[in-house]
Length: 334
Image (cartoon, rainbow, N blue to C red; front, side):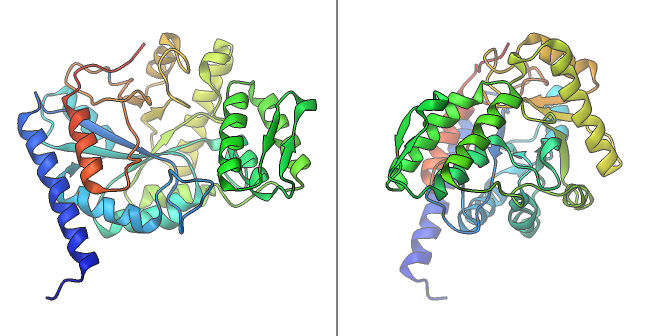
C-alpha cells in the first residue's frame, strides 16, 4: 500500500509514542494505573475550547491507546490494583460532567476500538440544563462589543475583540466564579449572559435516556454530585446530600448500582477534604477519582485515585508525558 506523507507521519508518530510507552512500562517500578480525564469531544475545532479534542484527534488517540495499553473499566482496574493483579500498561478512560457529545461523538469512537470508559454525571444538568462555565463561555462567544464591562458586578472589565481576548476573559471569569456558592455563581453567569445579549444553551448536556444508553452499551456510569459544587465550600450536610442524591438519581436512571464517584474540580484539600472522602466511603462507593496528577499504585487510596488530562496534540509528546507520570511515586491526596 502506498503511504501518503500524512499517513507516514501518523504511522511514525504512533510508532514513536509506542516505543516511549513500552520503555517506560518496562522500566517503571511496579504496575501503575494511569487514568485519563476528558470532558468533551468536539465535532470540529472550537477556538474557545482549545484543550478539548476534536473527534478526529480523539479517534487517533483511542486507536493508539487500544494498541499500546490494556484499557479497563475503572472499577475493575481499582479492584485489580487492590489485589495486586493489575496487568501491565493498565489504563482507564474517564469523562466528567455529562456532555451530550460524550454520547453522540465519543461513544461511537470508543465502540469502534472496543474500549470501555467511565462517565461521571452531574445529574442536575440532565434534560436541558447548563453548567455555569458553559453559560459564561457561550455568553463571551456571542458578545458584540470589543470590551465586556462587568465592573458593576465586581467582575472587572475585559477586552473581547478577538478569540485570544475572549479566551483570557473566559479564564478570568471562570476562576472568579468557580468558588462562589452554587446559586450565586449561576446568578452571576446568567447576568453575564444577559449583559452579552446571549441565551443559555439547552443542548450541551445529556438526557437521562442517553445516560441509560451508555450503561446498556457497557460503559460505566459514575456520580459527580447534582450541581457540581466545590464540596469544600459546602456545609457537611449539603455536601452529603449532593453526593447521595446524585448516586440515587443515577441508580434510578440506569437501574443498577453506581459504585464510582468523581470529586468536582477534584483538587485534594482545596476542593475536597478528608470528611468528603469518608462521606463517599459511607455511601458505599468502591472507588473515587480526583484531579491530582499522578498514577495509582498498590498503596493508593481507592477513594482518591489520581488522573490527568491528555492535552498533548501529538502522540510522542503524550507518550512522553504519560511515561513521566508512570514514574511518579507520589501524588497529592488528603
